[in-house]
Amino acid sequence: MLVLTRKIDESIIIGDNIRVTIVDIRGDQVKVGIDAPREISVHREEIYLEIQAENLRAALSTKTADLGKIAEMLKPDKKKEEE
Image 1 (tube, rainbow, N blue to C red):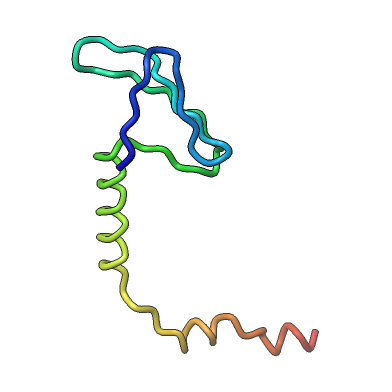
Image 2: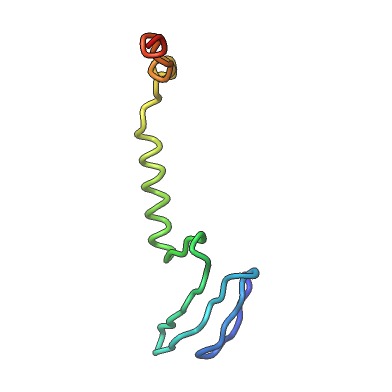
């Protein structure tokens, strides 16, 4: 882990397009501003872990689909093709 010391209004740059700025420091709390492209998700760690757990629960609860039934449903209707 890289550990850096920054003061209020100082930033660090991650890659070419993520800027992390120290916005405020009060006691044992630090407010951090993050400027990142929209396609990059930014979450507090506890929220990220909840999202991952929910995704895992959803994946495990999904029943395996009968691919043969799905293939039949996707086949073009011969009657409609003849019209």
